[in-house]
Length: 120
Image (cartoon, rainbow, N blue to C red; front, top):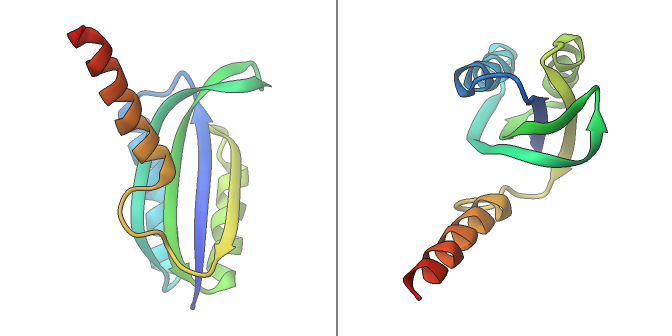
């Protein structure tokens, strides 16, 4: 089976529970088609570089998927239909990253920096 990273952007007006439900739905689609989601990361609400469908921000979610290509086709088809998802991208990778992704490490670094400034 092939390894994929699937990132989607959900509308800014959704609650965190609704975003988690979208991630759970994507996981169910993959698992129903004999695939496996090895990791799910919610990167949070982030500003976009430009407006997309009247949204200046979006909730970012990443899924690491271990599945055949047909599963990814079905996941992308379902994602296209969903009105709460404004953008998505799926890429094939040679191997999944161990531990937290670059975006999660960046968030931790930013928190530490803010904490250091507060101590001065």
